[in-house]
Image (tube, rainbow, N blue to C red):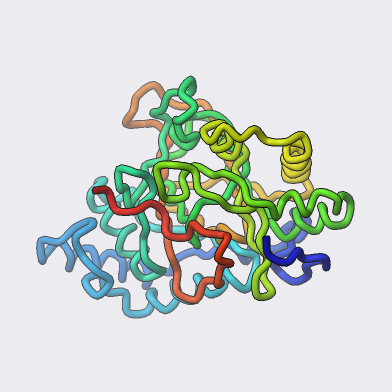
Length: 324
């Protein structure tokens, strides 16, 4: 176990809902010039017979937008940990073209990594899973998606269609979560730095990682209660009463309305989140019966240049290995 942070975290990463009552600087509308760059890049790609995932960064030219996207990645490390890019023209293109656009944008932000054992590089977030199967990943259903982080540096969610009703996205600062625990319940901190079993850290069996890791002056967090409980069940290693109490404490804090920022993403919105600094969630939703009308988002997991160094006992920035 690494060192335990015993000081309150200050700065822009330790935000609360009230910080954004009059601040929408986290919304970044694309300019007409940047939209034109995206469209020109796609047209050039198609002219050469290229498409997702069989092209590289140099094949998808973004003369000025590339630098903006790079700056966004740096900002995710140094500021609030989230940005909403608005205005990607998803309504103008079919699924193949949207995938190519998203892949091209992702290549200018970092290295996309695989999101499941099947090797998906762009994840389809839709209500198509079986709620009765514990192995079903919650994003494949219309159920409430608990606050969590993903095993890579940055997660991107591109909204293609909204639900019939509901499906609000919510974010919570892990620094503010930590400050609450440190201030009011510091007795749980040593438990939360203890290695635990996580499925989906890259192998067939659960990997080992703590919830909190403090390394080289930066606090990182990894949490999804359902998977922690599943991982310990899979390894026949029951969670202790104190660990379950610690989970209950985390859940109570992140569900406090004063902690979170909510957003209803519109088609063409791209939410970018630093997985070490921000937890993300989604409310349950009512969907359409027609599959072609159902709520749909596309997900990218990105390993990003300039991301923080992680402690040796806090693995999981590379997604899943290539399928054999």
